Image (tube, rainbow, N blue to C red; front, side):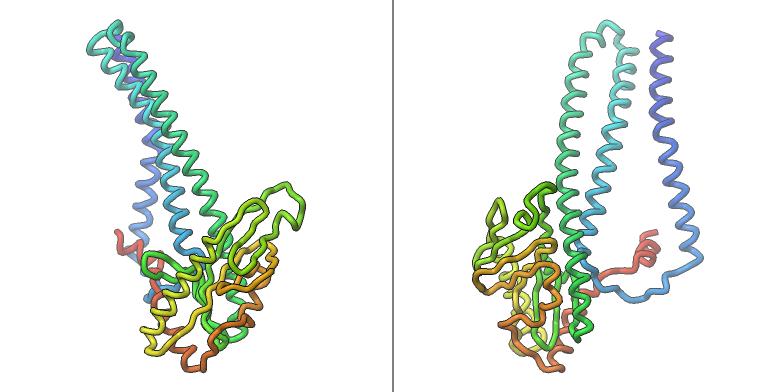
Length: 307
């Protein structure tokens, strides 16, 4: 039995040693930050505007955290199972535990298979979030250039149970832009593999066809027009737009939704079908949109409150 006791001690020692370093580092880091925040405060006293891809950036952080926890769990749990196996062997005897070894082995294989499948799905979702975030940032940077033409540009506008990726308010009208970060094949036939055809009703990519982004953009524009009309007290029209950064767009028809590649967005304000606005209406509408987008607490101030 003394051999079993020594083995159990060794396994628990390995588990404790493996966890002690990360736990100590986290405790020291949190302690240092807490001490620093007791002496200093954030200079920012107002909420900040949402940036391009704000919601996706939060989802990316959560997805990364989930993957880190899952990998840590996958690494630590087998050690704990081994320790449990040895502990039970110490209590009931080696022969009895050897008969149960296949059960433990099957449970371990099932657990590892489940965690690996979960991590693969999480990795796919992480790639999709990254592509979407990159697209929103790229489109946001293009739209920010419109401020030189007198437009007000806002990002990640929070509506009811959904977000509008970008809202542009200018004398030329109000635009609700839905961004799609569709990836392209690494190997292909050049421009032909990176071109989407728009006939006014459907987006036709090289290997698939969809109406979903157009319908989504139109729904969002209708909601925004209704909300703005109520907020400013006069009818406001909103033009729905779909932005496809990195793609070439060939148009053979015109529908209710405008479709732009990323590089075409500087010409957004020249779009037809918009409602021109006097200067005072531009200011009133931009003010309402800004108030709804100013929701981001300064990171340092938020962390200090959480102490």
